[in-house]
Length: 194
Length: 194
DNA sequence: ATTATCTATAGATCTATAGATAATGC
DNA sequence: ATTATCTATAGATCTATAGATAATGC
Image: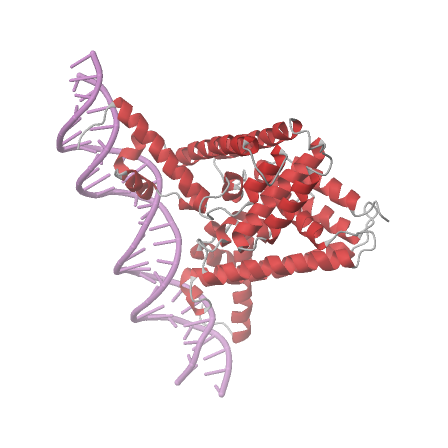
């Protein structure tokens, strides 16, 4: 097999990023093996460096991509109709904390420990910070346009941290207690003032 | 240098666990290199396997040790006198979310992603679950004996998740916003009923 | 002619083991 | 005699690079 068309090469690049994103969400940065990911895309490791300058560069790009995907999903889930939960923020919380395949977690949780400045490349740390900032902005935007929610900025930061912490704890322990408590309280708290 | 005394060997074993605990808190399971840790203790890697059956076994033991240390610290901090915060639960929250050296984080956060059942050894997953359970028990015990705190069990689980999430987010992003919001709200909420 | 991908490999890890060494403990 | 530790190394990674190959794009 020889060279791909420019168009195909661009698609291959995106597939590599998608696979890296999936691996990151499953096992953090430690789960990124260039040979593995290239094999999953159907290529060999040698081709990797025509697309990315280093493993670190791929991780940072996958982080950007993962957060981008989360922003989209959050917006969709908040907007979606739901019988059980009336407010859009409540719907987002319910989606975020409902049992999902454990192998594909939120990038905030999957990358949290790896993204700290003393461990991550500068690129990854920047991508993570920007990603969290963007997701929180999405969160507050949804809250502001939700008439059933009247939380202050500080209370929103609190709720956001609780959501993320509960996700991490329930995922790691397999005990839904954390996710359930946060979901119930936040859904109630964004509806009782309607 | 030849053989150590039985007493010295036991001390060496504990020093290996302490170094592993420090490495775990700094960089998660990925930061555990047997040669590194043994060198830090002043030994060579060959001696490792007289003390531990495998790298995974050391990680699990370090996890147990780390949680044990946290339980002790939490109890001390809650009991300590403080001018600024009156309730013992508030003191614990303040300690847990105050700026600490980023290199020595809470085991719940440092090991969270590594401890999930599809990634960790069974030993590590069990140690993590037990550790979280014990820390939450410590948390609720402190809350129950604190007359300024009247949170329900569900609200305590919520507060606990918020604390952990804020710790992870502030540590990873370097932005104290999450820690500050959770600290202020929880300290206020455990005092306004006094 | 250019270049995306492949094959092959250098160099640097890291875990675990085997056998040697020397101090302990009886 | 026993055993905690050391030296040395096998075997298995993994990242990154060099040079070959073959299809694209002009």
